[in-house]
Image (tube, rainbow, N blue to C red; front, side, top):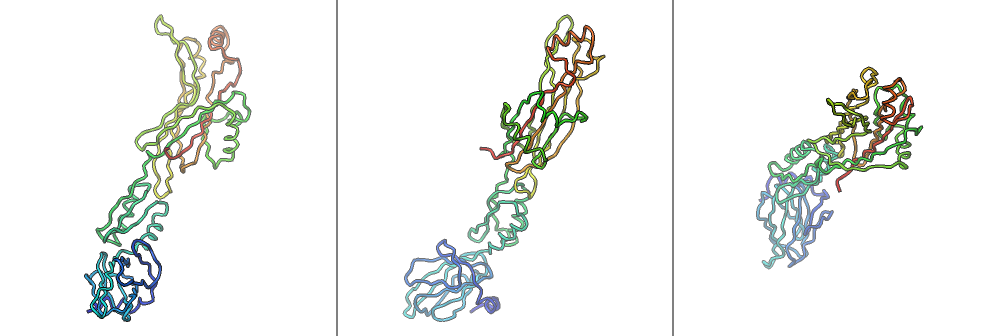
Length: 375
């Protein structure tokens, strides 16, 4: 007895062209030829979709093991219409007029994965999610940028196969990303880089992205200079820290003892990253900068053996970086300006530090930062 559900759907679905699978190979069309005495075949039918199979010889009797999974209707003595009803696998048996077995055909009814793939692409366009069927359920695998994206994919898949979704999706971790830094030391009198700073800026640090007009020209002019390259692993709970600048040696008096200490003259960088939702793997980089320079307070520096007074300036910059993109950090720390100092103490300072008596002496540093996959 053919169910009323089957009759209602069959009346409007006879001419629908569907996709089905024979022995794991996907075929497009309406009719599958079933060869007499052939080995078992498997035909995939999406839920609420239909296919027509054709026997190589006329059949006299048909039976299906589980009509709750798939239903059928004979169209002729050689063709039969199969309708998928519930996810699962059942067997369709074909018998000829003499009572001999023509074939046992495995009918595998699955969720319409093509529609699910389409919906996932619409809702999570930047995620790399793949969909497969497994028995009566759905398997999700691939990579996503966040746990939230994985959760959304499972919720959507459950609409097609309630409580039958296996989530094998990997969350793309920041651990798989590397930050490469190339630090260049540039001559003090290099006009191009000196002109980047007008002299009126409060900060001695510039951060440039490819969107800046000067980015390409700066990058090309860095090539002749000597560089130091380092690689850092980007982790969600760990900051990447490095110093850009130079060091000034100075005498420090501690009672009757005078020792030589190094004073940092530059900028400390602390960089942390976090994945951005639905952004094709982009990372939001938070760059914290602490600039440290020598105080120009003559009263403090009148005695060469006094500890240097440092001036600290803090700032935060946020930029979004795609895999393969880069930034340039330009650091021009203020060097010791000795010209204003006169008299014996000034001469001692000049002699001790062995520096030229120029008004605006600077050492410039450039750091090219690149984001890439770990190798």
